[in-house]
Length: 493
Image (cartoon, rainbow, N blue to C red; front, side, top):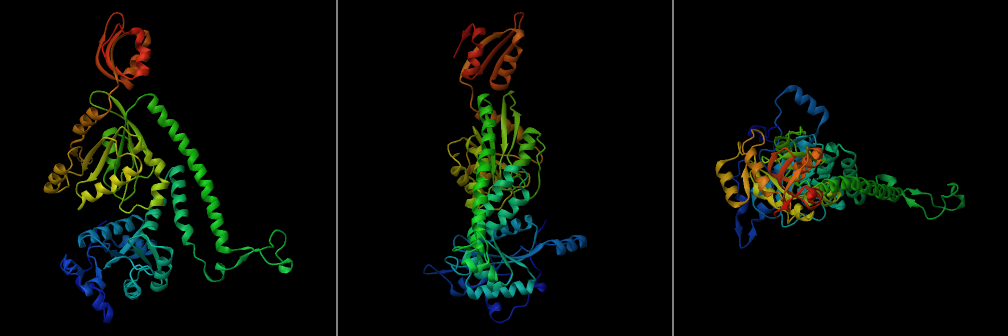
């Protein structure tokens, strides 16, 4: 999927107020940066600024027909409150990618510079009307806002533009709902959707105030319907709360089962490595390179939602588990972080974090900061971290060197070509926690299972097959050392 700006001769004609408000597409980046005494120019502050390169380019006729039949046609709108013009454009470009992942056709995108979003309509009543004009001109059926709108903002903006309004949070929730595959993943998404929906229920016409029950004995409602009653929307809210409570109980039960599996891995002292990173940074591709797991790899945001845990082996023969986790994105909805906290626990419980960042992205430093914020939230801030700069084969060399200088514990790899993967495995080998007890043991051949456990759970330093059995020099954990004690003539550490 590619993005291209609308050709100049195909720009929608604007007159009057819109002509003044919408900036020409060839306005140089940075024009919004003129400051007079700390204040932005009044005209610039008021303008809706069209963002280049957001419209989806359709080449194949069949694809065009399919999209016209199946996909929502959306206009994007963002409010730029801080940072540079480039920051605001990158955020809207990411919103365009999210919209496409959700299955939408992006028609256009505009940004307004404000100190803060308008409390009533997000962009102000006048600009909301101009946005309505843009919706009419482009034939859009949905407006997607680059932020989380309050229930009041959502309703008021929808009333002005006369089409469906979706905010960034609802869009991400929709993508998660499409991509969740496991029972737990689906339950977590449903819970987050209900948490989002609850304060945003909107009654239409009489349904808002229609009483459920209530009235006196002559109301005709029958048994158990008399009394104060409740409105239809109150009934909906009560049912949603009841369903949310049930879903939380189900998720807690599923979490218990996953904790038992994790405890089993810990009991066997298998070191764990978690792959974390921004969405679409190449985490699943890296997992496949390191383990041959065959996990879904797709050039789409949030292609992986359900955690995948696989076993891998270091060059020295040490076994460890590698967990692929859900990708992060800026402004990840708080409810979604809470709902997926159980799956993100793989990060908080790991011995080592592989923090994957897209080396070819225009702003990889922002991606690193966003992911680290979530890692802190799930209790992983004290865990050793290796920054894996992926897509090194497609990255700008200067940008790559800048990242390697800024991140002292970083390595450049390409999960697509395999570049740097062997060096990464060697680095993982040195970073994984080592068993505490070093010993030498002569294990009889009748106890072959013990030798296998030393290979699987410990670190074999030397191995020799003698007439009496297998002579091992190894590092093992305390539990395994106790089992080997009868065969250890000398313990050296």
